[in-house]
Length: 93
Image (cartoon, rainbow, N blue to C red; front, side):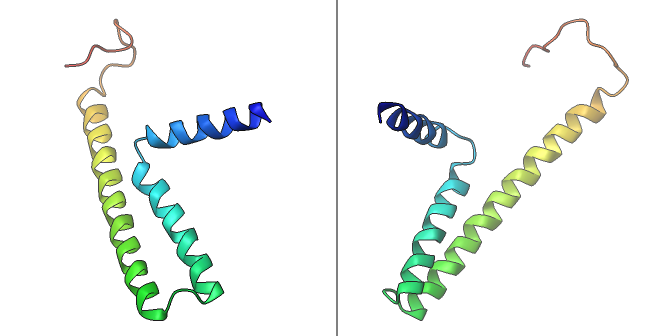
């Protein structure tokens, strides 16, 4: 039983410190409102508002991911002539 609690605690700590915390929150809220919609607890107006807000969070996450990919691509193309580095891992600028 204590190992199960430890696993759950480790998973929660990993999610809380993750870069993609917004996606974890998005998934949890989506699942919550799926259950509320299926059981009839939440009305259509509330569900549609939540769906729109979840789509906005998803769009923000996609924009953030695209920016990270652009940064990686720029860093790679700027240093594409070097196959092997003399100092690895490279020192931060």
